[in-house]
Image (cartoon, rainbow, N blue to C red; front, side, top):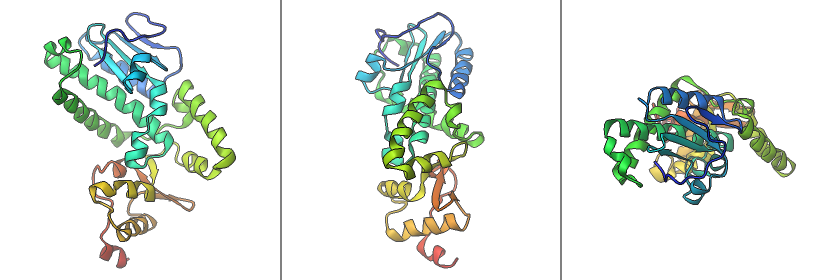
Length: 256
């Protein structure tokens, strides 16, 4: 949900407005959501640098009175919570920003369907924001069961251009990082295993050097994640803690 005075560019009524070149998969998700919204969403706008979203550090907004969802592609590039909290690589971080933003705003649409009085709130009570986050995470898990992270050239013209420009700059001084990013295009791998494991220390899954080493051995044995060249990676489900626990106890690793 968001403020009605959002400043947008290229508005048209009753359609997807995308002059920048948004990711096709995100467009399809929001198009389906608009069709199923029972008239609560009549327009979806993709933009970059929306002032109100930038000021509030928001990826997107649903404006029920305007029946509008707006997604800020620039915010998806700059926000790094998936990297900082889960150890994801940059491409995956950008993609999950966009995917989660779309699913989160559609969760708000669903909430308004069930409780129309929510349209009266300029800022939703925390309980509804928390519920929308849970709904978006659940939908994200469902998406991951049948999809992989798109290739750069499948992420839409604007995102592709921005990421390629950044990687061209990085390659001069940090070619290894760029190669790590590009090696997992079009897969369900999203993070270097050791980086993700150490980020995960805060919830106790890999709270010792032995547990991290056990994880790396499990990848070498083909039990979790994947190894490409000399690099070990984890899948999105593993990084987000979905499904079977990918960690191994020290004694289990020692028996391999």
